[in-house]
Length: 147
Image 1 (tube, one colour):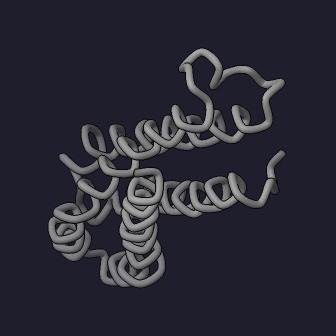
Image 2 (tube, rainbow, N blue to C red):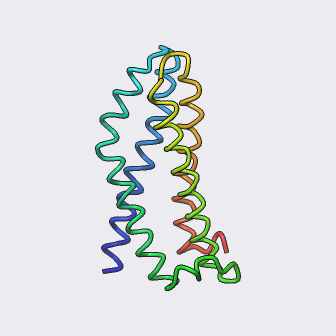
């Protein structure tokens, strides 16, 4: 079961991170150059259909994997345990991602126009960085880089 859950987690991470890299590196520069919120919204409407389920799968499988490694939610915050430090790093990245996503969804996107595209870029770039850091932190479960 562990292998299947880990595979689903990695596949979802690939979709989430890959989509955000494409958004930040390919789509966003064109959107900013053309000052076209429509291009951004077109990408978001297509990507959201696979990106959001991927994020949900990541969160669900991530919780399962964390409980498998450190059984007990309260133990995830035990900084004397190196694995708990990595779990906590993932939780912090998740919190940051959710915070930026909620701000974008409820404040920026409803009034998105050519003048607010830079504000949206200030949401896209950090979430892309967070998604890459999710992978770096995840790899450290096996490599021990972070502990």
